[in-house]
Image (cartoon, helix red, strand yellow):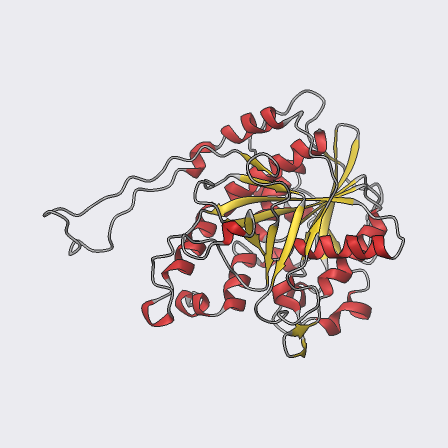
Length: 390
């Protein structure tokens, strides 16, 4: 059993715990070609006629070193909970274990940029993928094994390798998408953003304080000119309502009966969540970015992250940077979009955050992810469907 107190005090271990939570031995193994009914989840999602995601197996089994197939839309996700939700929503009938494995140029270009212990070192690959269709659009869903805050080998004081940037450039070149969506979990920064809300934004910003703090891209912001479609947002909300009961939080009380208030142990009723879409230009200022950090940071009632971004995660600004570089070099570059679900609400900044008292802020952020990461990720997968269908 992992030492949670130790994990909560180590930013790298804490992020890795979140990334790999729910992982089993099959995740690092070969693809399972035949779906197993016991591993599949039927979410019962009733999509509008003609727009249900339709996964498509490739006619010829690819090798792990083959280039990715072409698609109009490339969807990239990051953690075990996120890929599980994305598979159940956009490749129904095919679990993450059935996705094709991808290690193209892993040994030649990437292995020397990845530090020991990183998820990609264990998996010995760059990612996994599966094609699907939404309406008339070809969509390629991709789960990355590379991560900004897990891979880097130190190259200087506050600088490190960033192989996930090379991965974005590589897979965009192979897929030739018109649109790239990065999707997954995030920490909510606004106090009124509920568990399971989905932030949809065309902006991303680096907020790097550790291994990348002295890189010239730190604090850089990026914007996409993608026009957010609203045609299927109402249908998306109805789909999210179908599993709203999975996002009911428990009532909370103190850990022992010695915490008495007027002779009674207080019990605080939990809020009731009604997840919705939080879209830039509507729910918050236009292009308020998603914040990309190099450690597991989360919004609290004391750290003011809502003044900087609509959520906080560990990768999206890399996509914005890569697309900008492609444009600067005269290459055809896709539009892009960030879709992130609130897997943890804004955390109480008054809780202790020092190791000697146990970092209770990190404790609760991780508890929320472990408990609700999958179901909140279903919401961002639904939002991804709504953007593509629109």
